[in-house]
Length: 188
Image (cartoon, rainbow, N blue to C red; front, side, top):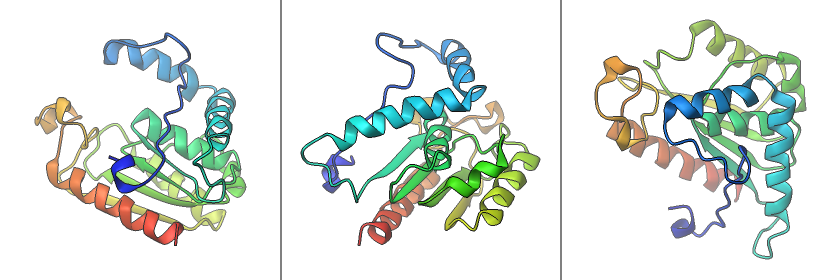
């Protein structure tokens, strides 16, 4: 979908060669390894960014990173690492703020698309995330989609909000449009 919009699309493999969790039960511990070691996560995503920069069709001054769920957490950590990119977009990513002082490293603009009813994001974490960005004077946006829970962009998540993760077509489409508007702003 990104390529259809005219962008070069590149996916960083955070887990490593041949590591492919088959279900959420396998993915959870793998993601947890990186969520508990943010420096390792930052090293992995920055290695991916450097590989992207080497691609002949890439303009190194016009790079953004997007991520869904664990990927959303990952792109926020990319920003916190001080990466020289134009922006990041997190779709239903983890919004905790384990080292709030790292917000001062953020050089890019941030768009967060979040399910307003996501039970996996604690209100205290959301408040700490917002404080981190405010304190660091980051240019950021947080869009909360009413009636949406975690994984709102994923049709395979089903449609039962009581499970905590479910597809929400309106939020999915609205968040994609928000990302496109964000890109129009940062790449003008």
